[in-house]
Length: 375
Image 1 (cartoon, rainbow, N blue to C red):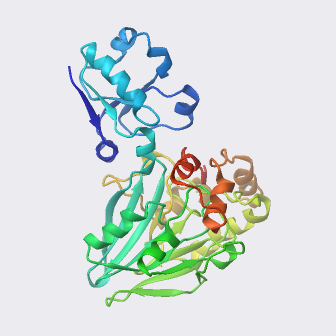
Image 2: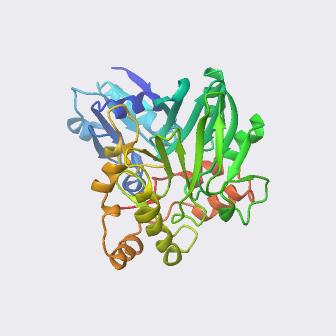
Image 3: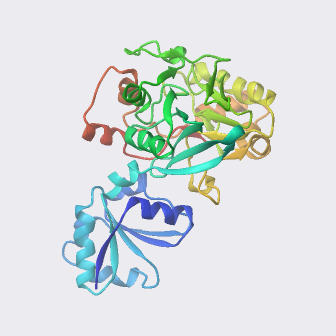
């Protein structure tokens, strides 16, 4: 029998195309229960690596023979060893190249749609972390919004599209992942925008991103307009792109709403969150397409792999937008908070420019699922 590697990109296609996959996850049970590869047609079994050191015969009947079997561990080594044992036992299996470390860092760029005058809007889907980043491209210029720390992916993509990155934005000071925004700006000479109300403690220069700021990308005049929308953070700012798309940052998601507590101010900011969701957004055109900075569950992906939905549909379907009582809303948001993201306080410090961890430390900080939302 043979042992083959499967890349994070190949797994991503299986997720997006809703293909079947059977995953044997050999990480410790607590790590598996906290965070795993999600797919709508995926099946799973979790057996820690150390339980298989004496042989794999007992698990052979549990593994299907009519679909791909992928062995997964944290960094690759353990899964490769178990895959080799399964191969010796007569089974064709794959192991995940780079393990969950590679899955956490993989980005899938997907075109969301065309913009006025020939422009394009792309969403970069980080399936393993639930992060969503964006690039607006128009006539040789590009703007990047909510970039994650893998800066080469964005700069290389812009080169492929023969576009120069001129502007970089963060909708807020992120707490669940390390931003690549200012590093992209440093590498390209682009202008970096950050909401000033989130930037009291930052130690680098930035351009204030405030309500009403409009930046034009390319000669076709694609407007990226800022809309102050506090609640997740006090500075959270949304964008309306080309009068067609609403980039909501971590305020509004497809199936949930943003949490207000990652700077320790849930009670203070829950009123801002409600004001944004129930008043500011209600004044916008219902035909705007909502593009959030995260997704929480795999069911939020559309058929093409994008995470996007019409604002009017969210007003009708998103539970967080349909809580009439302000007291009930406050309790829903503050009483049902999920666990806070791993190392979120340190991540905030990184995004302020106060600490500079090495690559391994950054990986460890970001390990785990998206935890920016309240459902």
